[in-house]
Length: 343
Image 1 (cartoon, rainbow, N blue to C red):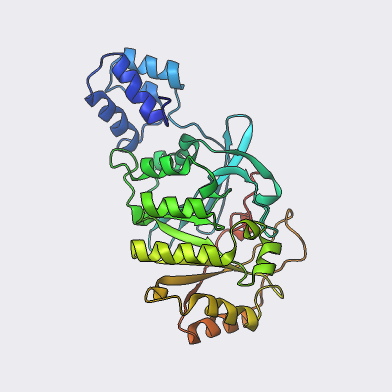
Image 2 (cartoon, rainbow, N blue to C red):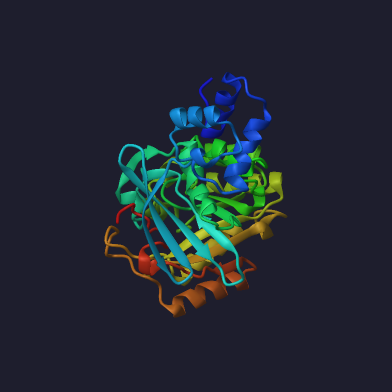
């Protein structure tokens, strides 16, 4: 069976060389506890084993290469090179209370073409491998950062990449990253097969659904996926997710001036989320300011403060939990919808 990740390959190499099982623990300790990023520096294991690991996997533990880092207040965005000459981006957010959160990519580009998102203008180049997904976090870890929480809100639609589930298994493996399931968030535009599988395999992982319009016809115009997985079917699946897991589902809603920020939209969002059953209080709306880029249509702009406040008031008055997301990183194109994989 083909190994799913470098960690499985390391185990195979150790077994092939008839080395004791604890050698694997020495290697994972070197990476995750001592933050050693090159096999040649793992002097706690025999030289012939180091040489074989280098021969099979290369000297660098990570498969992604940092090319450019841009930083602004509380945000750092890294452009990584990956196999095949492609590029992806990941973002680190540092909150005032000392929390380090990461936004990582699951695909190079994205094939779903949401009209307001820069990543969607690239089209899908390819799915990232399990290692390429997790190595984005490994890079930050090896450079001394704490991995407090991670969201799959970078480039790509996470649930469209079958490697996502192997990556989640690695991120939650106590011998590897050891992240708590509740510290991980997967964001989706509404891929039903992936929502069902996440509920089954990783029920404690947080789920965010990108709504962006409560009206089917408009949503299909903004997000073509709505024709394949219509809003009501997705909402039924989310109800099922909440009933099964007892966990909140987050509803992401990017406010576009004059397009989806009217009182009519706010009323319809409330209507969509109320009356769903005893679990409806577990829906939580995150309103997100729109971030323009050179790649997205010029017809979109950020809602004014008045419209945002009115939207919030309507949702609150209908008993809907709502937060206006603090926006970091728009000045370095590191905010929601801005990741493009360019310099």
